[in-house]
Image (cartoon, one colour):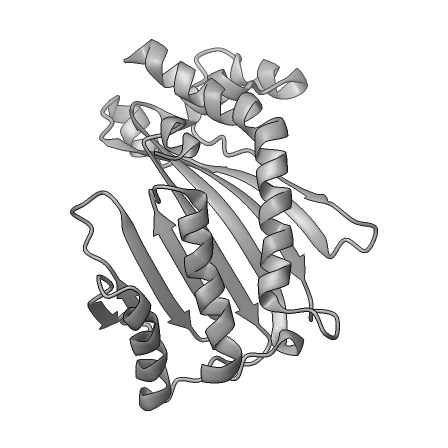
Length: 248
């Protein structure tokens, strides 16, 4: 099992390629693209179209691990949920990026943004926002607001984006997503649901001449894992896991 599998109930590694021009939607083009991916991963046998027109190819979910791939109007997304190793997910994403220039006519010039994202889900039955505030801290003035009278935290989803180069085209974003609503807090009745932490490294804009999608994704992965181990695990993931453990 990957080290990341010990940090949360589920983790996943995603690729998102956002384009300036619409992704081709012709029946033959879409099916040939998915069939080429399926040739490498035969277990991806579930194909369907969402109501909004997005096309999806995915594995069964029962095993606890799942690959999926989607085509949206201006985005190609690839994801592996609970991969045994990060290299296995990375190989899947490299395959997709290697195919899109030839099968979908998506070139590096057409790149609006390329993302390498690592996500972590924590199952928790209770007030998600209150737990996140407790685990990560609100700090300063925000802490005094949360302690006013009978105050209960209804929404606390910290998010920060930082630039990693002078041009601000290389960025990292940390975002926490909770799923508690005011109705649940009012009734003091909470279903078990996921608190999600997303950590993304993103390259904005067209790629430089001669630079490939695969090379860019490799650099994004390296930076993402560097920051994850240097900051995010100890500052965010472990405190959340420990706070949930104390309340269990």
